[in-house]
Length: 259
Length: 284
Image 1 (cartoon, one colour):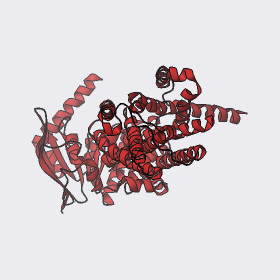
Image 2: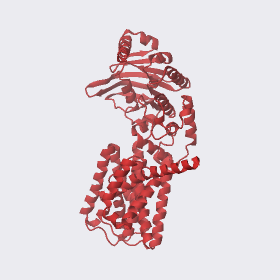
Image 3: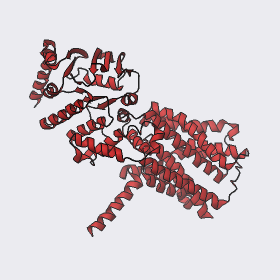
Image 4: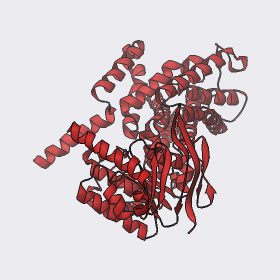
């Protein structure tokens, strides 16, 4: 299979710290790839480098044959990236449906003057309704973000990314803050989307859901790639177990101690 | 005759205030130097008609010249945000007055006198200004509903997230600056041909703050709120001498009270009253 998203030699330094050091991996067309690693491993930085919110000092990022590492964020999005951020950022003055409809109207907002020439939002509202239904929060369509709990906002964020009809959907911890049932349901939605043809990169701390749904794992630790391949094989690697599970256990213990 | 003057002043003030509302209210880009574009419109129209140019051509010319400079200043909004943008646009305002004072062809400190009358009579001129104000109101209401308004709204709230939805923030901001400054230029040209004399004091920092006060008192981003605020605040100094004498003091008190007690301005007050009325009706 051809790589739809190909990342090679990406390095990001913040001050003297290597957030990412020469990291590369391929996301094949149709993949459901899990990008995992302990806190501070560089997962979100990688996501931000792919979307252009962080400029890597080195490396190349190719989306569907186009080198995008020098392009501004909005161009990358229009070339087929859809992003759901870890920290939800809904537009506060718009309802959940309007948030999603704005993304669904991407063809109309491509050019300011074309955007001025059209006012009808009927089609986009319908699409927003369908997407909110898909992620299981159709009841929240007319609510403002301030009235919604985090679990709902996470799904608004995912619906908004989906409204862009992305070739690659980047999901940064979409399950965080959801209870077990909600998490499993949203993970199933992601699997469904993937089956329908959307390539997905899933950053997740919820390891049981990652192991359940992902067919490919990339593991980062301290800004370096330490695993890449079949989930069972990757997790069997002692280096991965040590770095990832060790840290996960340690942070679990820390949480327990704090509680 | 007095009422005609009031309506004329009201009309170009409404255009001027809505022009800033487009940039600051709709697109969220603060400007403390908007009077410069009002001045650029006034001066370019004045130069053109005193040189024998037609008044009717002076209007689009003023819009084009002001919009051109607005485009250039708009680039500042791509580099700096929020309070830094406020300081930068304030600098643009001072740059304009400083430049005009030094230029003989702009009349320097003296200004430009003897701007020819449009030659259509007082009442038709008032009607022209009112019709243009109505057109700008209609345009603002439409723009807010359009996809451009939707995208402006997103940029005003959170421009980084707007980018992740594929919105070309830079082009939208520049468009807001060009539209807003061109309309300020139109208001300036109408002003110049009403008073028939332009001097740099009419476009200084105080004027920039006055127009910002109209937008804030009206309710940032609200079309009708800003129209009401601009209509009242522009004619109060003509109606009441005490308002003219203490204009700055009254603007200061107004700005402080609105920001402190009703940050949504007249718009939110009107909505509150409306809710009370309709609430009482349903209760009864």
